Length: 161
Image (cartoon, rainbow, N blue to C red; front, side):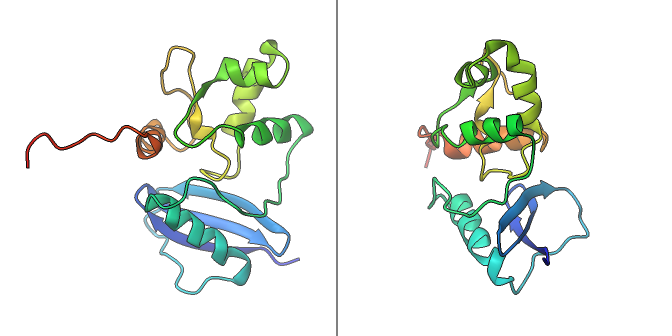
């Protein structure tokens, strides 16, 4: 089964989309300056590229994509729980562990959150520290901050015209 890859430019860097006819296998962002956006997308990745561009344009708050999820049963349960965090909302790592049924699993839940292979699509950026701090984001805390501000229902208005 052939694995396809495509790249799109986003405000946070070049995003790599990988997948096949069974769904996406990963969505990631990086700082590789040598990558260039794809001009013609494989059919299996075109919908993902469009939906990600809509998200960054502020026109999409949820994704409707087929995911080909690979991981341990625990990782899959964490990633599934992340899908229940609404756009514009956050939960703590402790709350994530609580939702999984065991507050003692907080470290394991945080580790699985950090190994999420579907950047933005499975919204791991919506998990924050119990004190409201932006902790633990594989893509860099500046990206997590940008994403949370992008999703915030409270947009800063210009004070002066």
